[in-house]
Length: 352
Image (cartoon, rainbow, N blue to C red; front, side):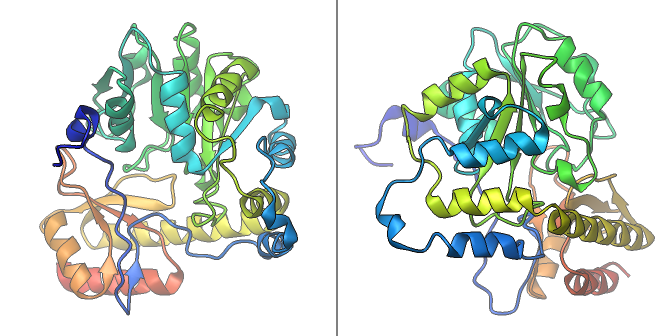
């Protein structure tokens, strides 16, 4: 620690992102990136921005992108907020909507940025335990609170809460904001955006990093009632009025416009997820039902920590969380068919 640090910095326990290894030969299955490249229309849209216009600031309101997203989901552009990755969008949500007089609620096993934001912004929180099957029980959230946030599908478990159950949580908390973090919803789930016009307390966040293969472009979004979006805009314009550059805005709009590529890409991932799940179950793994582009699993005899280390020796990187209740589990991103074959061969040798 430095004497120049503020007390806030001294007390922070920062989020630890997935490793980006510099190994020469690597099967990288640890950060939930899409194994298939982005739409060619996205690449062309970005190329068209590489001109003298880069000397000018981008549109601070990302108006065209918000209009494209609004048309895609059947909402007004005034109901759409965009930011530099969904993590920035979530940061503005914690500041603008979740800092209340009562503690907010989120699952005990969930996206680990939530407690970091609580610490950074002074948001009081209380975790709600998942059940023994690592599922969210909506009844547990029908209690006094300052707001609710949870991923659906949940991360790192991959478990999905049906839209009807999500609606129960929203309807049961009419006086607080319910944030549904849908980073992985396109791999088999149903978005809650269809409910935003019914519930003024609902805000849905998504990212282009997963199903649309744009983790390197950093684009996230939120959809909800105009009043909620206005709160995010007030925070954004007090922090950074230009969160999305010209390339990001153009590429993101093109990604939403190329539905054929999007549908093909996510179906390929889902098919590989099902194949890997079946194969690993046959090797003695418990694999939780997943509606994401990853699986969450543990072996009946070999520890998760040991498997992660021995896979790494073979150039295969997966994610191990050394945390209560899940310290024996691995989160494994679904890769290409070839990458998944390498994974399965290695696991067969290590557990056979």
